[in-house]
Image (cartoon, rainbow over all chains, first blue to last red; front, side):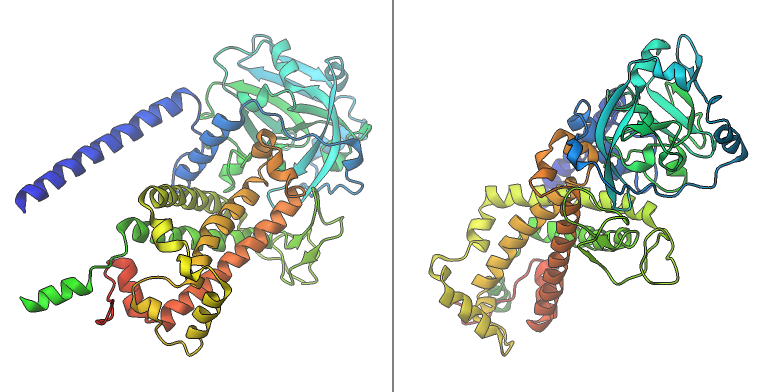
Length: 252
Length: 245
């Protein structure tokens, strides 16, 4: 009986040691390959980390689904945004002619771009779906400058790992990793369905991140900051979403 | 020690530890999924068919409940609290728990012959008459011969197989079909179902079927002897009738 128990104890101990070292090694490897999301702490950390790591292993380079022109929604739903602040109203009154996009942080040549500067970059269009975390969705054509073009032009530094982006309402900010930031479909969007991007849909400038849920596509973008760490931004959870209780990674 | 030997004989049938552990982890995960899933639905209790759907398009059907977003017309004069943040975190964490547990169970079940031995209907039972008999035997809700034999009858076996190999895979698939990143990598996951909104609607119905299974399952456990069934699924000891052949 004692022998049996001892054997069990030794096997159990070895298994536990192997398991813990395995987890430790997995954590190091995951950190090394960027598989850990910024909101990895607390009770939801394990689930978020599994989701983000699995998505990064499976979908890093895949494109979001694109649709035919005939599938563009006749009645897209803009959703609500908080009332525009005075700065926005001022820009709106000027027809957004003074709208600037600042690109700073870990870039060799920080710039401030007007909308026409942005239009001088290669302009692309895509017909993709906006899916809200609530469950509803619509398809539209989005026209704009791929974020990757702007990041290349400003000389994104090799140590940069994330891109943080802000709405004119500074409390509304998000961030994405380089897999999404350098993705060709991630678009600084200025047009929708062959017209200017309406204000209700984020005009004059919205960052469309079609591989993630709608709340990552922040409206009224004025600033983009490249960084190697999200720790210094807000509460260090990656964006305003986790601070409000929502997951940072929304590609689900 | 004749008492011990009798007891030994009565306890020759056991519910395997893998079945018991994976069963209870699945219970926890499933309850978490139902609660969080129900909560998420409240933010948009409208269902659609096809790729897209929103408050500007015609729903397939609408649940007659208030919503947690005032942008959704429900006919109710009030809006419920937004609880989607933790609901979504919990939903995906519980989904991982259920999926990983299910993988352990299915791989073990195949390797060990659990499905073949305990869940595939016995050759003699693979006909309509056996189904009918198994159901009829339950009408007076007396403990069944199969239960006495410490084994599942053909209706139970079929139901468990459908839950394990049809409903759970379907609810996972339709869940993944709502992920914008996953459907980018595997477009067929959404298109084969008719689109994202179809996937969401099927996800809702399959979840409801699983919930119906849970209710019936628990009812049957209570009816067929709550204590002995719970003991079997917790300690593994199955008490078998004495004239077992």
